[in-house]
Length: 300
Image (cartoon, rainbow, N blue to C red; front, side, top):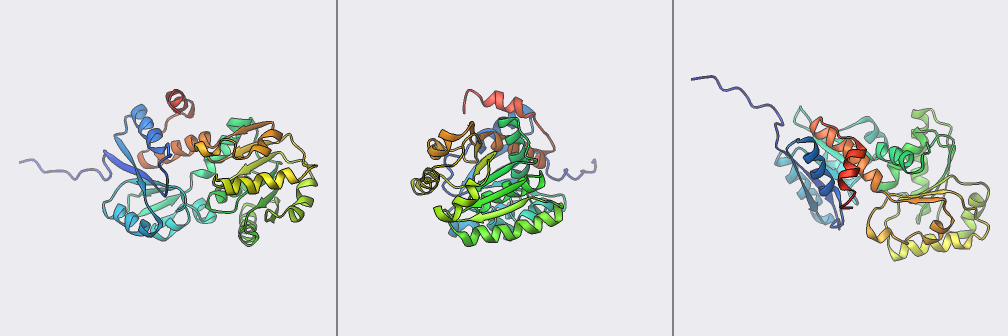
């Protein structure tokens, strides 16, 4: 009788999925299962739409089953930090995770592929890099952290964070100053709430190259943003508008900014770029962005 050899750790089929709340719109299952068909990685990707009160039980169950990996979306990009054993350098610095992987040591490690996804998407959509740019960042939640870190890392000249809560914007600004130190960055960072008088001097004082929206689309938040910029009668146009949301709700959500922008892009390209990175972390196989974009062009 031949001696049986141990099966390789994490031999396919791989199981993965996305964790979030109210994510029926998510394209991640379609994207990752399409990448799998291209690469033949034998990965099966599903969706875990979990309410906040059940997230801990659901994610711990995921770990107990030894599932290979997951994407993490709103509202759990910071919450998941409690449940992973280690973090990549950038995920630890930013304090947000969008990708989790079962490592060779048997522990779960958190990564942030949104950072690379954001940088690549801006370059792809606008044929621009971020170095030397003046940027308005709308929102100061979990989704904004990767974009803010990327802007600092890539050498943005100055960033104005505008958020519903001035306190949260100020907290993020203070964290960003720590990032600046580690990255040896000279980026200037300002912050404000959506109060017209408070923000008008900062906005009207210069020409802005890019406006990045990380606020989740809703009638309430749309009114807040549109009322602010419609109230700024002398606000200059001619900027690029990047909305990280790709859901159908984002159409017309930023109407005042869309009218003044040179070009608007949603977050689909960012989603694709970060998905390519996540898939590589799980399987060691990488597809080309243009290949997956072409495969999905008739579907999304």
